[in-house]
Length: 546
Image (tube, rainbow, N blue to C red; front, side, top):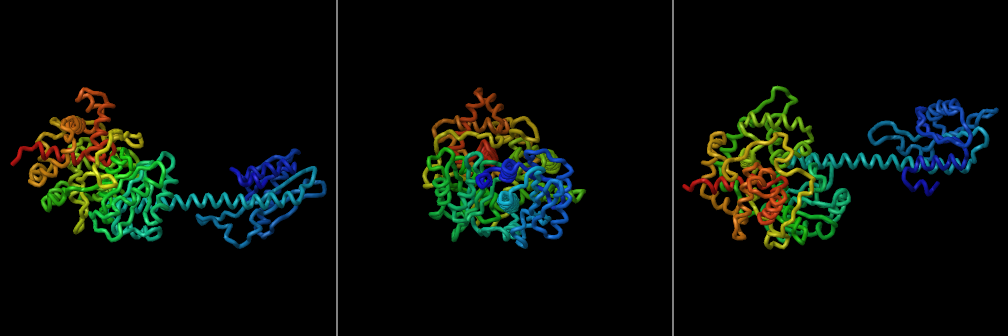
């Protein structure tokens, strides 16, 4: 019985062994008289005998009696033992959820032979331990699930820029949130995320805030404190976290962002995700994001004014019902949709139909067709320009990824979509739509709906930014990469439409885009995708100068 107690399902296993060795019918009875489990013995037992034993248990428990013997005078002898009697007053009768959950009673009935007392005592002792262990394991799982939900809530608040409530929620957890952190996205082997999370925590000395990604089942998100670093700095610790994780945690790839303040956690996540796209093919298994230019600073106050005008219908929106999403919640939904596409419902913890209804409301309020890359890019730019900023904040959407040693970001092709999430526009609740008429850049009639986007993008500094975005695609002396990206954007990020336009197979398109990911140092096939920046860059470059 001791061996069985250490195996799987110990309570029924020990009960079965007790029934076999004693030839008695054994049962577990709850303190309310409910028969929880029965294992028949060698001799048949009248149901009335077990029912009488069950009726006796509530009274015995109320009086605090640890054990009793019923029957005799020709009736079957019934032994009743309280499994929790050995530890009175230790809180074992309190369920972690606040409800009463006292230990059950063991009943042993044999109409023919008496049950050996030492066997019954040993079995009751083992069953009590097994029952408490099983209850403790259930409580541990509940606590772990609650801790995970709390950490996910903190991450969600940080992703939408609500730092103050995030700090209040995080105060009950450990470790404390840092003021400046690097965001690491860790991709681990399938089914091993829990093990990887524990290893990442140990590798980083318990200083990192580690959260399982609510969208992708193979990803972990870690906020690693950047002590003494200014946002955007390039200290020697830039790749430390990624190197430690990739070397010490088996089968992982790590993307690391620049140091970002907490209110820019969403930008840090996007940077780390882009770095992960290169890390998949890099021999070191980790890459860091390195930003050469800042689109927000290039546009300045004019960009903020333009974004406010475009998003004004949502900023001023007040729902008719208190239970409906308000303006900020709609914009949070828009940001999640642009980052995760059809998987946004998992990020927001809402139903697919609820997501579709919110997107329809956004489409009506903003007059944007969010199934098209062109309108998505306009919305992305507006959200980015209107996002929270701080003095000295150097995080921005434009960038390239450098390997952990600071060398060239380009690596061999071969990043493969593992099926964990659909590519951009695949499985979209908005459905398909027609592509833009020219090379990924829409016709000019959309500029009126976009509140003068072309005038905003005519800033001289943006041409340099745009050239930096697309130049790596032609670095090999050919225009194949650039032509593929143009066709892909024109097809609204859909691989079949791109393949049809180029006259090649879907797998060939995917391979070309994988190579483009490596030379750009950005994620394309999985969101957050760089398709919005690329569309804007092509819009700038294809506009007549002047």
